[in-house]
Image 1 (cartoon, rainbow, N blue to C red):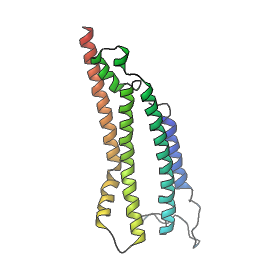
Image 2: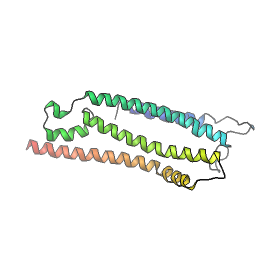
Image 3: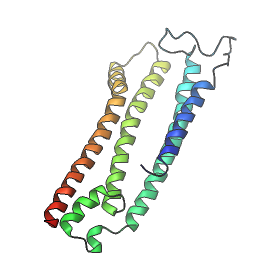
Image 4: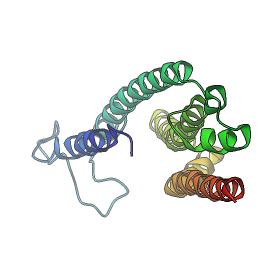
Length: 191
């Protein structure tokens, strides 16, 4: 686990809770509760409130997440540029290839980690952007629905968790295969 991973997860969770609870006791311009019955598609009473809560605040949090992600990518890239590979330190090239792909202490391992972080980022961004475009278009022109946007929203909205799980399990499967290769190569060299 990375040193700041728990902090990042905590901040993300707290920001989401603050966004959801901020309007719990609030009332709209008609002196009705901001949150309405949950039987409708949305708990919020009108389009303006939906826009403020779900899209303005969500996009502010999303932009802060982008900034954090970019800063983390820059820091990791600088670290990767400053790390020498095991093969440069005199380790056998056959062992170095497997270790470099697995170890965050090597430039190749760090670059592999950065590529995986990019996949998580894309898996998160695509559903949010498509959903936002669909909602804004629907609010701007309620009678002019675009079928393609609804299809994309329903497809990617439901796949959000599945896509992130696929990225996670693919990267974990890759790490496990590298560990097996590393053990096999280590066993062959030691015998």
